[in-house]
Structure formats: structure tokens, C-alpha cells
Image (cartoon, rainbow, N blue to C red; front, side, top):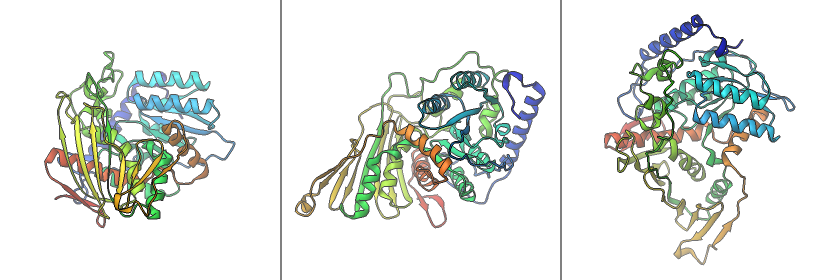
Length: 448
């Protein structure tokens, strides 16, 4: 059933690669009607065709071990691997990582070694993720591949009958997000989670309740940020292995997917978040964390108009911007202001401004402070929120629990779709110099 990298033969490897390239060519020739936001406005929308047949997977019962796999064993995938094993060892969940997939032999071998030594079981490895998805003994798949592969990996995993946890952002472009949305809605019995961990922080649930109660009046506008600094350039901490050899121990064509063919570039392979064809940079990698829970708390509908600016202030070597500023308007008129930087770590205070009172969210708790005109009607109040520990661990545990209970996961498709509208339109606005709008009735984006 499994393809172990140390035992694979070259004929199987060549067949898998040929099949991949044939499918990529087919996808490049199947354009759907119309255009959606694509981030850089040069990439046509292609239908992502499921390439793995439905497998019959029976959800685990209580008392049964959850068997899961990881696609992408690099930085984030490796982090998930270590943490999920630790959660199992501490007794917080009965889960085993039984299969891994990556196009790089050394990453795959390293992850396999860790998984086997720490779990005491044999772990199968695959250079072609489709072989992994054909198995009927895997309950859930965690996707930690680069952003340009998320959509295909999600759709194939759902079609193969697996529950899915995908790293953020959900997809690279908006057209891909809408196709993933279709796939998730077409598989209502399967669990789908997006890895934006701050959604688990209790303060955002409290803020949502306060807003719905009407205490602060109409939410007028909000602000948040994700800012950090670097002396050497953001994401340059991902190392480059001089032993990587495309065609020998790394399938560069498979990694590129629909964004190939291109000349081998180890910087792009290791630090793809710095390049606009492969990532939206600060917006999709950092701002989604703070944007997602705020959108959840406000419940203001879909983003309908976005304008954004980006600049190369310090890190001129990075293709993506090192300073970004977004203004997002929603269906109900609410406006969200977001700042992001990888050149200065001092951000904005996270808060929601209402007509009658404001909610301050910089700490673990919710602080309610009335507007001056309403001090006689509304008392200042501190809503204490529990310390849940590591919010990313809680998001992982939420997904694993939902695999058992079949209840919807916290960071769901509706929320993730709204976030991707904001991400994609902001990215296009930066690169093209225009405001962009989104029509929820047609689910289409256009230049304003």
C-alpha cells in the first residue's frame, strides 16, 4: 500500500512524475468562464480537477486512535509533527501520524525518523501525495505545503474522503478559494479546518457576544496589526541545503506545479514567502491570524471593498512588501484598518470602535469603555477571559476532536472564504494601484 522512499524504484518515480506533469498540463488548458481576483492579475483562473478517487474512510470512534498524515514536511509541517506527537504523549488526544509526503527526500527522511522514533511505529513516506491519499486507513490529512499547492491538496484530500486541516492562508488566490469552498460544501460530512489559531482565543468569542447584545451600539470601525522586525530580512531564516539536487533528491517540477516550469532557484524553494508569485507575503502569512478572529467577532458579512498600499522600506531584496496597510469595508458598512510590517515591531492596538462604546482586545481580556456621550448609560467593564495556553495547540485539538464528534471545526470554510476575499483584493490593490470590490451576490471580484 505504501511507497517508502528508501525502497522506491526509479520506474515508479518516473511514472508518478509523468502523471503529475500530464495533469498540470491538462489544468493549464481548462479555463473557467470569467475571472476572479488572482493577486497579481496575470494568472487566469483554472479549474482544479480532483485527481484522487473517493476512498471509503470510516471516522474513528471514541477509544480508537486517529490515524493522520502530513503533506509537506518542511518548517510548518515539521512543527505540526513534533507538536501533535507531544499532544498524544501528554494524553490530550489519541492520535498517530502514520504517513508523510514531500517532494524533497531529505525533509521526508528527517520527518520519518522523528515520527518513528517518537511514536515507536513504522511511518510510510510518499514523494507523490496522491499515493498517500489512496489509502483508506487515514482519517485526516494536515496540509503544510506552500501556498500555491493548498487548493489542489485540499480538493484532492476531500475527494479522497479525508478530513482536512490546512495551513493558512487557505489558498494563494481567490479563484482557488472559491473552488475550495465548492469542494468543502460538496462534502458536508467531512471536517475542514484552516490553521488561523487566534480564532481559539476566548476574548474574540466574548467580543462577539458583546456586539450581538447591542451594548456598544453599531460597530463603526476596527483596527489590528501584525508587526515584527528583522535584521537580515523576513523569512531568510529558512536555510538553504547545498545538498538539494533537483532531479536527484528533490522534484522541483512537482514543487512548482502550475507555476512552472522555471529554472532551479534554491531561494525560491526555501523562502517562497518572499516572492509574489508564490505568496502574498505579510498579508497571507501574518495578517490572516489577526484578521480572522476580528472578522469572526464582528460578523459584518463579506468584505465588499478593499484598498491597500505596500512598500519596500527596508528589505529591498524581498519581492513582496515589508510594509503594508489595508482598509477593508464590509457588507454592513463596517471598516477594518490593518497594518503589517516586517521592518518595525510596534503595531496598532487591537480594538473595535462602536457608536456607544469601544472594545479593547490587546490583552487576554475584553475591556469595554463607553464613549463620552454614553458614560451615564454604559459602565466601564473588564470581561475576564480564561488562559487557554497555546492557541495553536487548541486549534489542532479542536480539529482532532471534531474528527471524532463530526461537529464543524472552529476555523471554518465560511470564515476562511471571507478572509481570502480580503487577502486577495488587498494584494491586487497593492500591485495594481486600484481599489477592488467584491459582490457577495455573484461571488465575483472586480477593479473599482
